[in-house]
Length: 281
Ligand SMILES: N[C@@H](CCC(=O)N[C@@H](CSC=O)C(=O)NCC(=O)O)C(=O)O
Image (cartoon, rainbow, N blue to C red; front, side):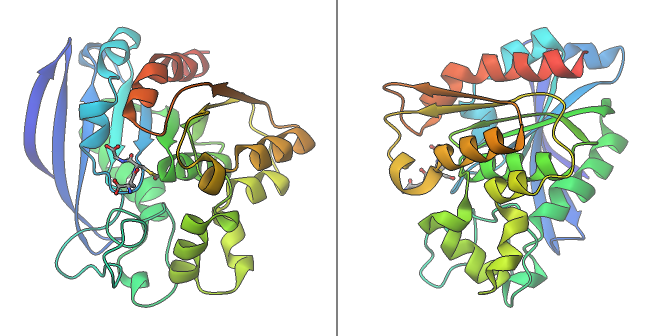
């Protein structure tokens, strides 16, 4: 692992790092906020998955999370949104919703995507192995959250790995990629036309078929002036599936908020406290 840069931030530091990813067959970058408490003992770790067009930098710059994370003693890890590099295929039209910056946190099975696009394995296996080797995070106290495409990633990865991710939350997540244009396009390219294969990456479908209901409530915030709400996000489908399956969900609808980082930073503190409460219990 190579350190790109490190910056003092409140009592801790923000760092940017690069490493060779075996699962994505390219170099990947990620960022970490390490709180002051990590000087004394391993701290809880919350992984943040960002949305379309973002990088590992977006959350650290725009999320406004570090002051409260330092107060609560939370390590924050922000992941890039796709594999990167010369050899990594992109959408033929370089569209923002497919290919680079749009890895959808899944393992692609279709060529040409299946050589590099293994973001599910990257988030759940490869990055944690590196992280817990290099940083003072506590692997028994992990949470996951994210925004939009990253909210989809947080819900799907969190629900599928309840032993690892004890706390889950999301900002304006894509709740049912099988039922929206962004998801339909990405799942067809990455996984092929057989929609049965898509269900593993659809939070609403995962809830319907859950073996193990999460112990703690999920927190989801949604802006009601979100420009993507009507076409892409489908929180109502997710809410109905959670209710039917007995999954505790706190879905908060906020008038006047759009899809962007002003919305996210407004409710960031609530999400950090949600994770801290669960992980310190
Ligand atoms: N047309 C826009 C679309 C990109 C966009 O809005 N990206 C969101 C995430 S959307 C779902 O995953 C985002 O977080 N953007 C980064 C930001 O800093 O706001 C465009 O290309 O701009």
